[in-house]
Length: 81
Picture: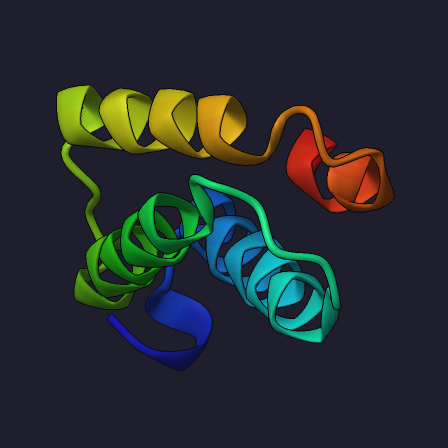
């Protein structure tokens, strides 16, 4: 789906993923699970690009991302989105 045909929830997911990816890329600190967060954000981006994310996979990715960067307070606003 593209343009006006895209589900608004998918559009918002894509926007939130893009914002978090940018903030994560700009975050200067290293942390142990950064690679996991980056991989799962890429997976979310791919799911959103397809237009219909699989709910169980979406939940898994969101939990992994939250676990990977949940302790990085600088990324909390984007993570909450």
